[in-house]
Length: 292
Image 1 (tube, helix red, strand yellow):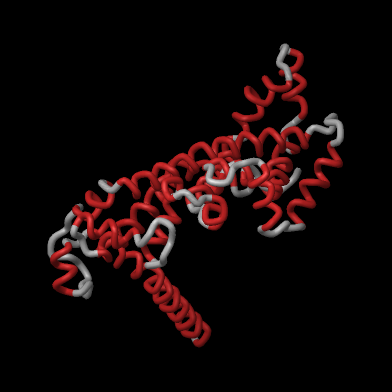
Image 2 (tube, rainbow, N blue to C red):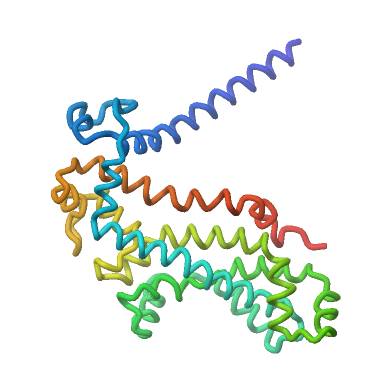
């Protein structure tokens, strides 16, 4: 009985702590969503001190999405997330599959180079000099090409490809398939769980790109959404000016409600991607973890 009471007390304490931590984490996000749906007049009247708005409205989102700067930034981020993810998956999967084939010439050298890219970080200046020498400063491709693949993802996918029986490739080869045909018709369909998992990682990375955009993009019209959002949330002086004040003054809206709506718009799209990949994600995250 004593152990049972101690166990119940321990469980109750841990549960209470987890609930408290969960509330600390969730409440700020709930407040952001609530303010984004509040009317400008109510926010000004109550100075933002309310739990739920008396009247829910989409006016903040309508005004925000009607501004050219925000729409352009959203389009840039969408382009990065879609095109960048597809190109990254193509490069990572094809490279990892090539490294998994023992008949590849220079395979050990390539594996060593991939390992070196994981162990040693070149820092900021060498990548910037490479991007500049390629003439990609102020180009949206400067945010895609340098980040096309990851050495860690290559090793994980290679481990997955190593587990695929060689008999499948031999059978396809006997039927007349070349190496590209084997990769497209045999290997890629078997790789859907890993492609879904890594695709989600890449999409989140491209959608949230921020630091590289500050380094390589000086043109206000080519900023991704996260850089624009940072400029709105922090009233910093940049080449684009105080965007929150500009948008608010153009639409005669309180600045804070537009900020909250911008945060929601920048967060929700990438969250909505997860349910479509959920059935593959659980298998994909285990790629390379066990080798038979």
